[in-house]
Length: 231
Ligand SMILES: C[S@@+](CC[C@H](N)C(=O)[O-])C[C@H]1O[C@@H](n2cnc3c(N)ncnc32)[C@H](O)[C@@H]1O
Image 1 (cartoon, rainbow, N blue to C red):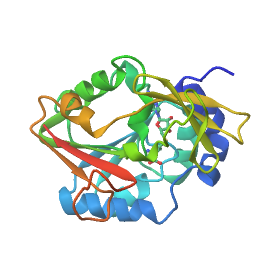
Image 2: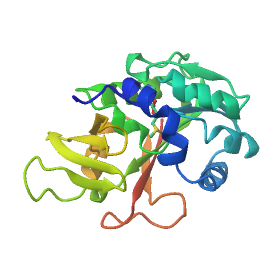
Image 3: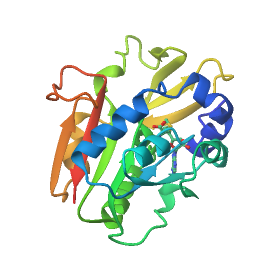
Image 4: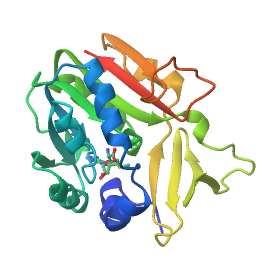
């Protein structure tokens, strides 16, 4: 089966996402508290909110969350968990929000890797910059590049995470495949540390954190990179 577009992929995965692929329940509140230490209470866009795991914790931490996702089936599940406003939109076509209208946008659990087509991630970051008010920030949680296993044989499938395989699919691209979902796959963008400078050109300040636990980012360690970029 050829790789699916990210919307089609999540439409197919939505029914099992919470049981099989979502972060553990306790992580959302910890991530929301980490955000609340960095940002004053404000409206926050959860870009790629999925089944809405962050919307409740964000609200309890004092934020006013709005969820956006391209997958109606993921949003349907989010709707069962929250009273937060939800927007169904494909962010590759832009964000349906006014210029300088938000102080905070978050995009967690590797959502940005799905912007894998040529120029898609660059265009999305431009859009987030347009929507953020001066002084506002984007917080993006990305897989650490070291989590992609080495490729012993060109083009071979490798274990990415339990139940997930990946294989090289071109410059800065991997195909991600779910073993238990009839081999459903989608293309993802590999975002390396060295790419951040170029991706965030023109932003006022960019920090990389080693997850949400505190401490200094060490490029040679860590499972995730939390990029905080201010306009
Ligand atoms: C790995 S899930 C993460 C969900 C959530 N952020 C979390 O932390 O649990 C990625 C989400 O991004 C959404 N997504 C992928 N491409 C998108 C796009 N072009 N526009 C809007 N949402 C998108 C998917 O539908 C999916 O719900």
